[in-house]
Structure formats: structure tokens, C-alpha cells
Length: 223
Image (cartoon, rainbow, N blue to C red; front, top):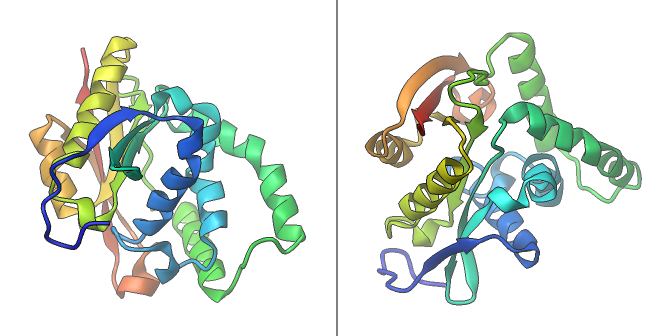
């Protein structure tokens, strides 16, 4: 792994392979808390990955691209061409196995995880979550890069490859949801032609940050 601040000259973006699953799960968990590790708010990164990124690995592997530096996967971009509804269906397919592991105590579910689940439930009940259901932007997008490898152009290359992939598939548009705290990514999205679609205050992160956070939905037409 490179040291923080060191420039990385050799990396490439390629199609995801099943052997990359553990690496993608690692990047997902390692960047979950505004670019920092998930343990800031959740005890078990395997459970977090099973609920979050595993549906994409199961149902949409052909829509995943990874960045590789040497032998290591250091970033990814993934999504569903038909958006969150299809991701929810994939998550439901995985849910019985996740519940079984929970009953068998295969996960560590502690105070942090329970507080996170409760915060998300309250946000849902109060209408604080932001989901895009616009036929102009049916596909969704999620991308993360490990901390030491940011600032190398990897995130831009990943997203550009994903946008090309969606265009080749004839998808009319793509959307993403992020927060006001993700300033570097916001500049990247806007430079790539994404436009703000909606915004909403949420208290999901108040227990950890001491304040509400603004959710931002961005979209880009592809044809």
C-alpha cells in the first residue's frame, strides 16, 4: 500500500470478476463513514457489506468495475441500470441467509449497530431519506476509493467507465445520492455533468456528527 500523499503512477480500471468480491466488500466497509472505516458506527463489517454491497455483487456483477493498483483492488464503481427498486429485490433474496446468520450469532451486533438501525428507521418514518425515482435517470451509481489512493484520478476513471458502459447499454440516465460533506466527490460529479435533482435534511448521522446532514441527489442524462 502506498503512503498518504505519495503519487501512484500505475493503476488500471477493469471489469469486475467474482474473485474481486472480498476486495470490493473491504473497500465498501473501509470507506463507509464519509470515507473512513465503518467501525465508527457499526460493529460488524461483514453484516454491513451483506446488507449494502452484496446485493450488487449478486444481481449486477456485469455492471461493476474496479480499479487495480498492483495486485490490489483499491476502488470500485457499481450500480443497477434500473435503480434502487431492483436492488431492493436483490436484497430481499439475500435477507433469509442474513437473518439465519444473525440468529446463529455469526454477526457482532452491538450498541453501535442497533443505534444505526434505529436512526435509519426514524429517518424513514420521518421521510428524511432520499431516493430518486425519475424515469429520466433510471440507473444508480455508487463509487468508493481507498483513502491512500484518492487524488490520483481513480474515482473519475471509474465513473467515466461506468457512464460509457451505461451509454453502450442504451440507458437514458443515471443518478446518485451523496451528502454535503463529500465535497471532493461533489466537485467531481459536477465536472462530469451531473446536475442537482433534489436535497433533503436527514438526522441519520446526528448521533455521530452532532447535527443533521444534507442529502443531495444528482443526475446526468446519457442520451
